[in-house]
Amino acid sequence: MDLNNSTTPEAERDLAQTPQWFVDAVEQHFGIKFELDACCLIATAKCEAFYSLADHGVDSLTVPWGRINWCNPPYSDITPWIEKATNEASRGNVSFLLIPDKPEVGYTRRCRKYGDTIIHMPHRLNFLKPDGTEFLDNENKKQGPKFPVALVLFTPWGLTMPVRDVYIDFRKVGIN
Image 1 (tube, rainbow, N blue to C red):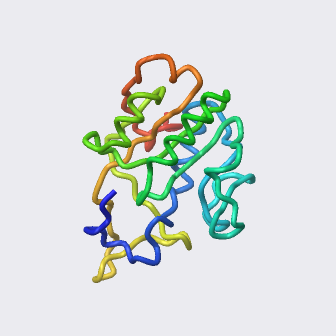
Image 2 (tube, helix red, strand yellow):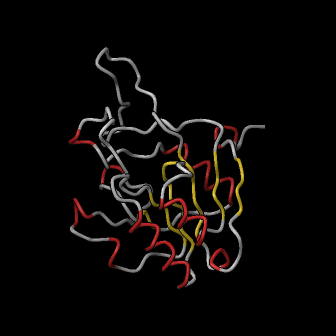
């Protein structure tokens, strides 16, 4: 993915974390509990079990994942993570990958070929810095995301059926 237009400081690129409320809403919506965060820092882990190349030297792309996995991969190189999630699905595991929602790129075509479901959202997700604070612009104003993201579900069943496209507003999960 071309990050040349990114306003994220270079030292923080590929380290943005998913807000916990979003992960909680996904778990609640699907009635699951993620067992492994496959790509994180210690400070950004969304599960008790996690792999961190930066903090522990564990390359998540080379080791087995769990039964139900969360993954917010580095956006500078998404394809290997989609390949890994596809491989894990062939082993019977389920993985949720949070990726840029860009239908024109190659990694999206791979998701459409091997993914079970692509969940589009009617909002843009505000990621957090690795330390949990918000991204701010030069004027100290909250910096919004420049692109939408999609949540792609990889399952054993998705390998043999056409991908489904759905829309879910995770901001409303759990609201009566």
